[in-house]
Image 1 (cartoon, rainbow, N blue to C red):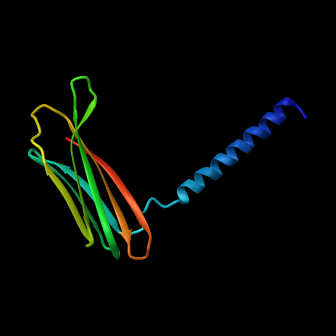
Image 2 (cartoon, rainbow, N blue to C red; image 1 turned 180 degrees about the vertical axis):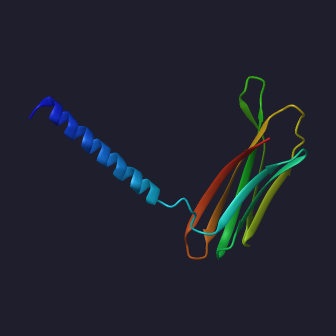
Image 3 (cartoon, rainbow, N blue to C red; image 1 turned 90 degrees about the vertical axis):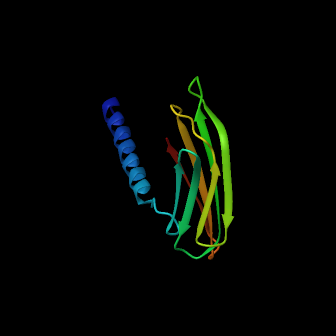
Length: 128
């Protein structure tokens, strides 16, 4: 078998495998188990994390960590909050006076423990 033919067979196999892997990745749903959402917000004097679901729930746990951008561009943790609820809504918040001209980011997550025994964690980040 010539070198060109061998190379062409190898390249063809790689292309077919990459297409197959891409098709599998597309087939995996980006949807969550439940009809659940979590959002984070940063305001001038406080920040909060809200989670809710329309699916039967055992509990929801939310947490948020607020970061302030430092002088050298590094993020410094300045505050955090958390809460747990056995209802379809859960909110955690904390007071923090943001400084004018500073950048802030809030990393947040919610863990949903559903009535059917399944659970999932949804995370996000917001900036101001």
